[in-house]
Length: 254
Image 1: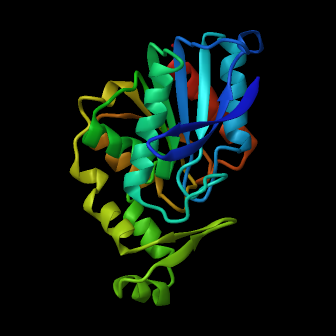
Image 2 (image 1 turned 60 degrees about the vertical axis):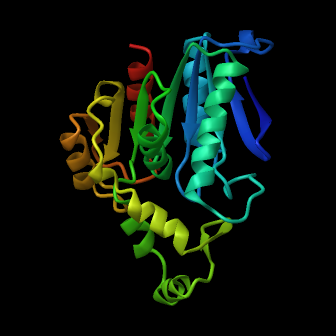
Image 3 (image 1 turned 90 degrees about the horizontal axis):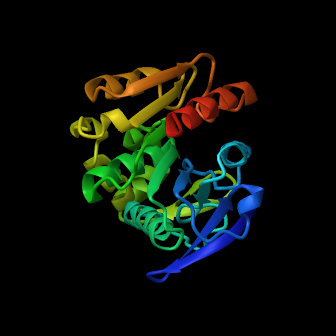
């Protein structure tokens, strides 16, 4: 079963999607809750998220899944993207899982930008997650973002102006957004304390974040990384996505 709901806290309205076992549709608490976060320009409403949520909760009825939209993504009402508000969203949804759903264990499955934000969250706010699965981790996100901003827009940013970026939905950013990404380079931090509870999955044909970048980060922090042969950045091939989901569910429920 899935249903949409909003978390209204701290002046924000976070658009969420809950998955749970059909027999638990009236339940108000779950022992295990998995948070699912998406990449830049995506949303909570993807086939991959639905496949993961339905597969996990059909197999294990004491698990629930909450996917949510980052600021300025999907159905979210905000117009300007900041790293700080993204981290606030992750904090609020984590607190909701613990306080409202009474989760004893909270897991995190994050993709691309979401993976970067999760890793940054661990350093800046601590680790509330039992286990973390990261797919297509945006290891060098500042460079990746900058490479996709046209030169005229880069000039505007340097002059203190905002620009519009995005795919189907456009959002505003300013130089402060890029500076925040540049000032927090994942390669400058150590994750040894969390490594046992982190799994990375990355496609060998990821043209946005090359596998070599993910491998370097994983090796530096002794994190297990599973390469998926032939998979691209969004894992568009259903077989590649199914394999990733299988590995993540096995990691969350060994």
